Image (cartoon, rainbow, N blue to C red; front, side):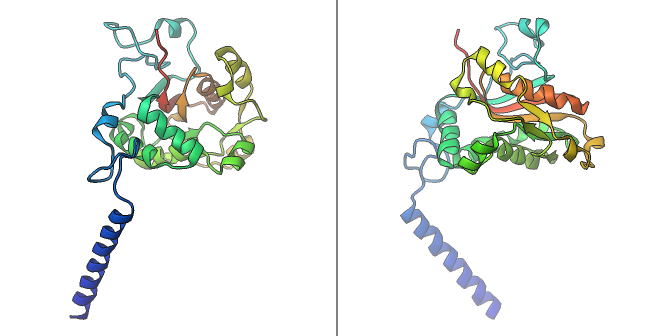
Length: 254
C-alpha cells in the first residue's frame, strides 16, 4: 500500500514538473526558436538542413559531377590527400551553421546534439567497433579560453554511437599558430604543415593500439581540407588506414 502511494506521489510530482517546465520554458525550435508543440526542429528549419551529397569522391569527399561513376575525382588521381576516405555529414549552411556557431561561441550544444543524433545509423554503418576515433587537436590556449574541445566532444559522441574507442591524447598540436579561419587556402596549408604530431610517450603505454583496425580523425567543420589532411598525415605513422570525418563541410560555389 505504501509503495503504491509513493509511486502515485512520484508520478504526480513528475507531472507537475513537466507542466511547470512547459510554462516557464515553452518548447521552441532548436535553431530559429519559433514556438513548437514539442521539442525539436520546425518545418522551415528542417527544410533548410542539407546532408552532404553521397555522390562524392571516395578520397577527398568533394561532390562529383552529375553522371560520373562513384570513385576518385580528377584531383585525387593526381594529388590525393593523406587520408584514404573523407566523410562529411552536413552542408555548412543555414541551421547547421547556426548550431555549430551557437556551440562554439556560446557553449550551447542542443542543436548540435540533435543534428548528430539524426546521423547515428549512418555512423554505425561507417565505423567499426575495432576502429579508433581521434579528434583534431585544439590549441591549448584556445581550449583554456573556451573551456571546450569541440572535436573531442564530437569524437566521444561518435565513439559512443559506434561502440568503438576514442582518445584525445594520441594526436597533439605542436605550438601556437594563427586561426585557420583568418587565412586563405594557401596560407592554411603553410600554417599547418608541421602542426600535428603523435604523443610517443603516451603511445608507449597505449595497450589498445595492436587491436585497432582503422583510425578516424574528426573535426567539426571541413573548409579547404588542410587541417584534416595534415592531421591524417601525422596519424599515418600509426600504420593503420586513416580516414577523416567532419560534422559539416562548406560547399564551394561554381
